[in-house]
Image (cartoon, rainbow, N blue to C red; front, side, top):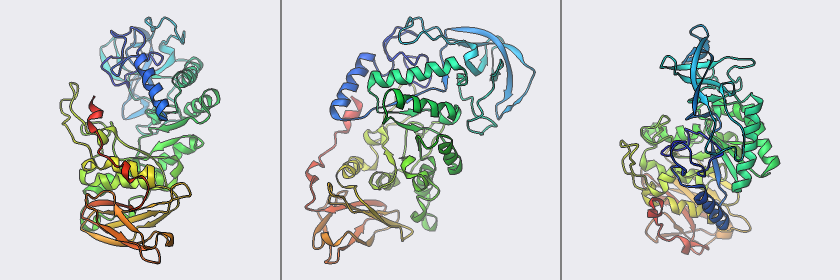
Length: 460
């Protein structure tokens, strides 16, 4: 791997910053020893670590090999645009620096299905590699006719040697690092059948509770549901349709800004146990291929929806928690402060302390919606969440007769204004303009833990 790369230009899956390869031993993120120290500390703190697995392709080959391929139309990958030709492709992977440690597998042209550069002619394009039983995978996204090819040297996951090596790697890395799960990068670009076999294998050989989230990037809920069906619902997937709803809602005004349908046609609505909900990530930032902006003033509302509700597996973006700053590779990126005016840590802590039990929705006004979490036997307080994308408002909500005559306070407001629940268990909860409120019992346990968050930690 390029020592300055982020990991998606993957060279050797088995090299975690241990071997002198491609001009360096450490990756951009550090050495294997540092990684192992991180994993030990995470285990000590009770934090499960998920690995971002790039299984679709390889990059940075050691040498060129000659083979037969056919150029295809980039916009219709099933359409061949010339006769088969001999090409020189960067597909020879020897991993000399690793010297057969962990795996003796070497990769050659027959282990791949496509490339994007013919070194003989010094010409770019998409070239499908030809050979016995070779073709694009059929169980991938149908965008561009067939979306098996994404970048670099595309792995042929129907090849038995490739399959065996990747299955072995899955068990090896999960065991070596005591992983709690994985993110499958570019899931719509490689065989769902192989993905299913991979997940089953790792759960059978290394961790039966292995959590897998697939980055199957599509705003089409039908395509996303189809992928989960192909996977026998053995994985979760990123709720891209929900992100699209957030993005559109954040820029709408007036009648078009109706919050009541914010969860419509989303994965968290239709398959809540298989939805990874999020507001931003590294791919959606400005200038990225999958840029999906959410207006900054709306992010507090969006994060409240994913963090405090019963459904989904919420994922918080590091850049929203700590802020971002430019680096030498991306000069166009500007420094951005933590999202939500620094209130995101409060939502995270509120989830930990209060977001338990059954849920009652109050999606009954276009610009002011809310919901109640009633708590459970271990976390009895519960909470009320209220969202407004327009002016100030208020909403009567039922928190339960057991809370009669108790005072409640909004964790997100600097003031100590309280409201009192009536004898029937109802409260009238106010909300300011374009904001979120999280109300909990004033006497609730854990409020002393809402201390100032040290965002500078993220830039050490």
